[in-house]
Length: 532
Image 1 (spheres, rainbow, N blue to C red):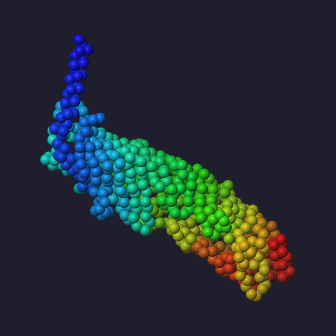
Image 2 (tube, rainbow, N blue to C red):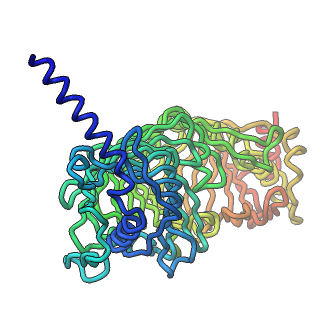
Image 3 (cartoon, helix red, strand yellow):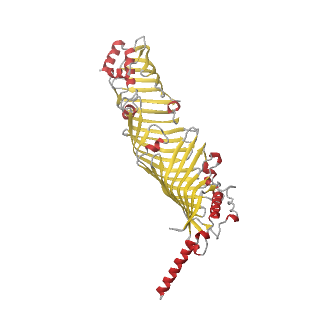
C-alpha cells in the first residue's frame, strides 16, 4: 500500500513539473524579462547593455537564453562594444516554478569577448560600475520594469566558457596581448566574488591558472576600484612567442613556470612572486657575424623574483647562469608610457666565460676570452640602450686571449708605427686575421664609467706573459668609435700611440717619440714575438 501511494505521489510530482514546464511561456513574459535584465545589468555596470534576442527553453533544464549580448564601451575609448557574448543563459529554478514563481540563477556566458584598452595609463575598465559616489548603493530598477509572475534573479554562480580578453595599449609603445580559452567559475558571496579557472595567454601559449581568487565590490563602487586577491600559477613550454610581444629582438626560447600572488585593485593590480626559465636560449640575427648570421647564447636557468604593476616591473634580484658563471642584478623597468627606462643595480658577474658571448654570439671586433668578474650599475632607455646607457663599474678578466680582429689589428699597428711619422690606417679584419695570431694574457682589469653610451676608462691594464698594456680613453657603444691612448711595455721598451676612428679604419698615431729605452730594434723584436 505504501509503495502505491509513493508511486502516485511521484507521478503527481512529475505531472506537476511537466505542467509547470509546459506553462513556462505563459509564466514568463519574455519581452519584460529581457527589458528588466538589460536594465539591471546596465545599472550594475554603468554602461548600456542590450541583447539581440531572447528565448525560453524547457529542456534539458528550464532556462532563459539571450543571443548577441553587447556591453557598450566608455565613449572616451571608442564606439566599439566593450564586451560581447554569443549566448547568455540564465537557469530557472525548478522548485519555485511548481508554485508559479520564476527565479533565475546560474548565469553562463558562451564565447565572451572583452576589449581592455590602456590609453595613456587610463584603463577602460576603471569606469565600470554603477554611477554615483563610491559607497552609495546603486539605484533600484523602476518597479514597472520588474518581470511578470514574481520573477527574480539570484545568481548563485557565473560560468565563462570559451571566453577571451584582448588587451591593447595605445600610443608610442603599443602592446597587443590576448587571453584565450578562458574557462572560469565565479561564485558571488555578498560583496565578494570568488573566482577559479584557467586560460591561455597569446602570443606564447602561456597557461594561467587562478586559485584562491576574489574580487570585493561594495555597492556603488566602480569595478576598477574593487580590491583584488589572487593566486596565479603560470606555465609554458616555450616563451618565444610571448617574448616577441614585448621584445622584437633578440628571441628568448625556453620553458617557464611560476607562482604569483596578486593584490591591489582590478585596474591597478600588483603581482609578486617568482618565474623560473629552464635552459633559456637567446637567439638573434647578427649581420656583423660570419655565416651563419643566426647566433645563439645559452643562459641556463634564469630565476626572476618579481614585483609587477602596470607602471613598473622589478626583479630583485634576477639571476642566471651564463658561460659557466653567474650573473645577477636588481632590475627595474618603467612600463608607463613615456617612461621606458631600465635600471640595473647591484650588477654582479662571477666567472662568466666571455668567449661564448663576445666571440660566438656578438662577434665583437674587440672580443676577448676568459672568465669575467664584474660589479657595477647601469640605466638606459629601452630600445635605445646604445645611445642612452649610463653606468659605472669595475671588472677583471682572468687568463684568456685577445681574439677580436680589431683588437689584434690595433696591437699590430701600434707596434708597426711606433716611432714613425705617418699614421697608418688598420687593414680589413680578414687581412689582419692572417697576420696576427690571438694574444694570450694573464688578466685585464679596469674601472669604467658610461655616459650616454660613451664608455670611458683611465686605468685599463692588460697583463700578458711578457707584455703590459695600459689604455686610457673612450669607446662609443653605438658605432664602435675609439679615441684612446695605448701604452705597451716590455721590460724597458715602451711603445705609445693614440687611436682614433671606427674599426677597421682606426688611425694609429705615435705619441712623442713612440719608443723609449729600446729603439727600433726592441720594437721589431716585440712585433716578431707577437706575430709568430
